[in-house]
Image (cartoon, rainbow, N blue to C red; front, top):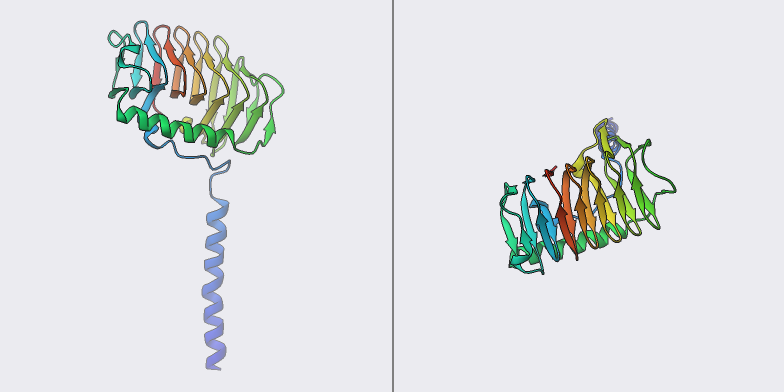
Length: 232
């Protein structure tokens, strides 16, 4: 009788433990597991060759340049930043190394859905979306749901004038990644959200705003006017 009681007690304990484990799995964020940005995480702008700002831009984070020379950062002031500036130093080099790791990790994720048309006017759930060529955004794309979103472009990412990203139902800019196989262009007046990770360059048109990061491995990051970049 005592042996049966002990077995019943152990079973009663084991069942809630399994139920808790199942609940933990079912409540986890959906979407892919992405590599850490590492030292890059504090940078609102990181570039390889140059950073240029015309006037009126506000950058909410660090800016960094490597391996380009410090003289290749221009426009600060009159443009402003809330963080530190690193150019051709050890901090910027470490950030670029971590960016390379993150870029390769994002590019290497298995594609979940192939993009065959403009993203404007669509609503997407967490996952990995890929195009063997360019990704275009005309109008608004809605990202709906808690989790990670990765967009892989074989070449350019282009956000048209007044193009935008809308976050809904728990989606957060910090969990959105735009990986460009060449360069990324954010058109005049566009409202972009997420981490823009480009092999070459990133340019922001007049009044284009970004909640995220502009991270260029080899080329320049160019700001054309009263842009804002805010860390997510």
